[in-house]
Image (cartoon, rainbow, N blue to C red; front, top):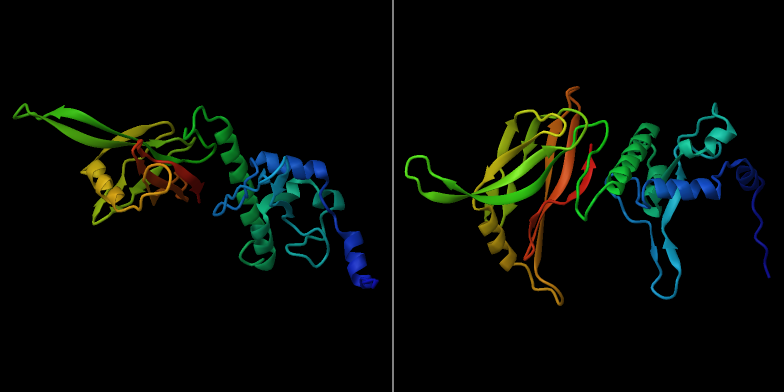
Length: 274
């Protein structure tokens, strides 16, 4: 048997490292609903093992400022108790935890703290959801989403003939006003829809209905080109990003998808993004 000894420096670093308690790690994971806090990742970090009653966890409580001298974003002026407190922790998947420590210039403390705040706000909003896919208010920011598609019969003013109008509902679910809202062009096969430049501001809770042309028919044609899965119906998912600003001119975005299948058209939110 061979014993591998550690250097004096390594042992000293381990002794000086201020790690989180099991209680803090559990609380951290629960506060973000076991999702990675990286706003561009949002990976689920916990789930069941394939066999038996085991649990697989790929999440880690990462230090925002390093746990020991010489580490990423280390602050010598804060105390050991502050270093191992929940305020200095962020829940990430293992990949993102490695990423933030490998590229410190790209991921400074300010970025990590904004991730943490948004991840907790998102978890809180999802906790208040009343049905699958329900979108609820995000606090302290504008949050513009498309949340409904519908068709209605409209009577022509001059001819009196009825025709069908397709519309989507655009709503600000945040607690701050949104201005300069841009709904992007969504490419559907060889067609596009929802082309709209900046339009009126939306106050918190306010919504407008925007007309779209041949939206359902274009999605139907595009769906026919999707390979038939071995189980279940065909489905189509087209991502798009809405851009808007707050009254302080700060730029915000919301990442969404057009989801289409035999069950109809929905607009799930991937995650609100800055």
